[in-house]
Image 1 (cartoon, rainbow, N blue to C red):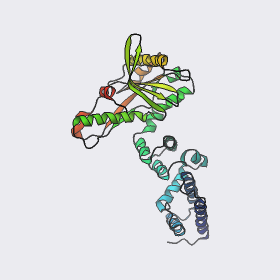
Image 2 (cartoon, rainbow, N blue to C red):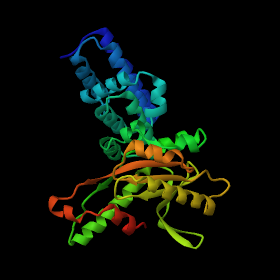
Image 3 (cartoon, rainbow, N blue to C red):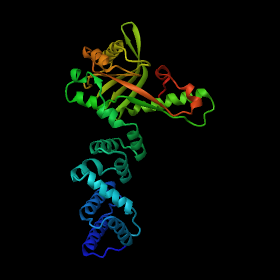
Image 4 (cartoon, rainbow, N blue to C red):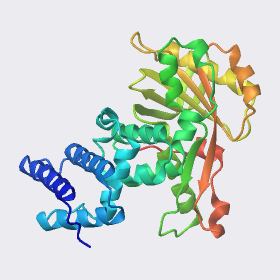
Length: 336
C-alpha cells in the first residue's frame, strides 16, 4: 500500500539525501559512518512514524527504488535502526561506545542483552579486544559481564594496592573463570582427546583478558636452598605487574593463601623491576566459602584474589571419563 502524503515524501527525500551524501563521501562502508547513518535513520523513523507498520515497509521499498544496489534497508533492518536509536538516544554514547563496531555486532548486542549498561559494557569490550560477532555472542552466553562486573570478588586489593591501581586490578579479574572443553575431530585415541582437552583449557586461560603476556607454566624459583614451582606466571602489560596464578583441585584452603603470598613475595624479590607494580596473586579453586576466603586474605601482605573456576564439558557422554583433572592441567599444560 502506497502512502501518498507530503510529509511522508519529505521524510523519504530526507533519508535519500542522507544516503546519497554518505555514498558520495565514500564512507558508507566504514563502520563509523554506517552506524551514525543508521542511528539517524532510526531517529527519523521514531520521530516521524505516524502511519504504523506500513510506514517502515513503504520506506524500505522507496529507498530500494532509489538505491537498488545498496543493501541494508529491509523493513527488518529499518526496525533495528529504530530500536538502536531508541535504546541509545544520546548521540555521545553512540560516538563513545558503538560507532566503531560492525552493524551485525550491534544487532547482536541489541538482540542478546536487555540492560543498556550491560550493552555498553559489551560494546566497549568488543571494540577494545577486537572481538568478532561470534566471539561477542560467546562471551555473552558465558555471562562475562556477570562474572567480571557484578561478581562478588574476594580480594584484598583495596588494602594492599593504592588507588586507582586497586580498582583497575579488581576490574581485570573474574569469578568464576570458565574453561571450556571442546572435542576435536578426528579423535582416534582417548589420550588424544585428553591432550586436546588440556590444550583447550590452556587457550581459555587467556580469557584473563587483554594485556596478559604468558611467561611460563611451572615457573621455577629458588629461595634459599629450596626449589619451588609456580603453576602459571603472567605479566600484565597494562597493569605493569606480574600475575602469579595457582590452580587448586579442591575447595579453598586458608593455607593456600599463605603459599600464594610467599610466591608473590618471591617474584617481587627476584623479578620485579623499579618500573613494575606489586605482583598480583590469583588463586583458582573448585569452590570457596567467601567468608573464609575474606578472613584468610585480611592479614596477607600481598595483593591476592580468590576465584572459582568451572569446566564446561562439551564431549560426548562416552568420552567424559577422559576429562583431565585440575592436577592434570597444572602438571601437563603445554604452551607454544
